[in-house]
Length: 310
Image (cartoon, rainbow, N blue to C red):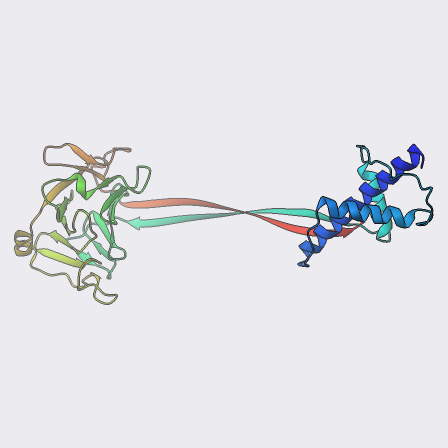
């Protein structure tokens, strides 16, 4: 066998072996069992393939089996040989990516009149109001005090944390920052109203009481054994025991409203929570017009495997 013939035969052996490996890999992907073969197995199969292609098994003058040399394989040639064994059809797998994006914009205008009012008013189990403040008892563990004059709010939430809405983040302080009491905290408001929380410094709201003059509104929080979907949050009845109830309810730790509406100071006028970010409002605005803008961007990417026959 000539050197050219030997090289051609080696090329064919390598091409055949590549095709067999590719076929076995495809079978495994399709869940079929394929026997693992060693290098010796492939060598013996190659020899059998060569012997079947030789001129005669009885010819004793056959040339020795050619040595397979290290060669460079042209993958394009292998591709064409594989295509020839499959009727010219070769399956190609491609990844198809599709991306989409949608933008939703919502605008909202809210108008609120700031007419003067006396005492306390309960709207429902979630909302109560004094002359300057709106109180929202949301879920038994979240309580918001909104200064209607400055439109700044303070939220007591969780175990319990302080969130002032003109500072970044939802945790701008904690009841644990105050040291006089570990279960009672009082907020003194600028219109003379008082809000007292019964809540451990590492717990959630058990009870909240709002006092103004002779009036009193009480609310039950999640930490109370009396709390239920029907019995929790604000009592819808304003009680006229404000003076006596205020005297019998401990104040515990005390902070005082100031600054631009949601800054809180201790008795020595040291800032405890908040930061003055706007003008200090000294008189009632006749109304408040609030504008909110929200933009929601939704993006999605889908990936598909596409099999094409070449």
